[in-house]
Image 1 (cartoon, rainbow, N blue to C red):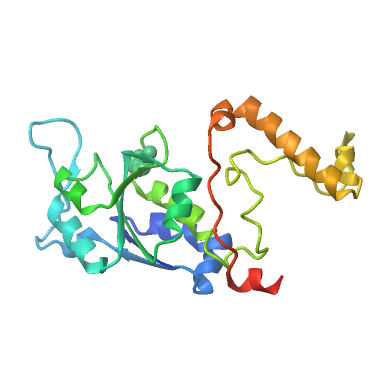
Image 2: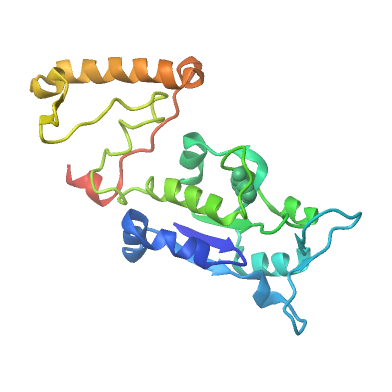
Length: 239
Ligand code: ADE
């Protein structure tokens, strides 16, 4: 998958997405990440990208033209353009699954008080990662790109690692434990030590239901679980 970000601060996206699993996905070619900086598309001596809002108000707005030109540089036929904004559709696992099917995503990241409204119609989707205001769309784009990248077939080493996980079946995951079996007096639940696969599966389901009911009653009441992508790619084929 190819992802481009239109941003005044590429380092805010490039740096966190150079580590760990996403960093590896980039190194191995599962994810190609590029940047287009509106500042590179200005023509004045000061390379101005922002201005005061018409009608007054606090803060500065990103001007439409440099953002438009930066977008035009990376947008191709078939690109899916996402404007990061707290006013957007709420991001969740079902949106991540939807975006993971696309060939090319372009994220427009606002900074300061946002972007001139006339940029909005250029986006296929407006996306928010929650009801709070960040300093810019960049940290939000990082969260979305991370969640989407791990869904690209082959990125996770265990082929089925995205199947039995939180949100994909509409439930929070059951708790996990690793060695030692007793840690500072705290024991791993008996069922997990039993070696009985049916018992373990039943225990996990009942724990997941209980946990979801307690911590996220909204999820517990939700209807259809979201679908997981078909198993494909290098690691899944090995099985
Ligand atoms: N930009 C600023 N805050 C944001 C949020 N919560 N989601 C997406 N983009 C944002």
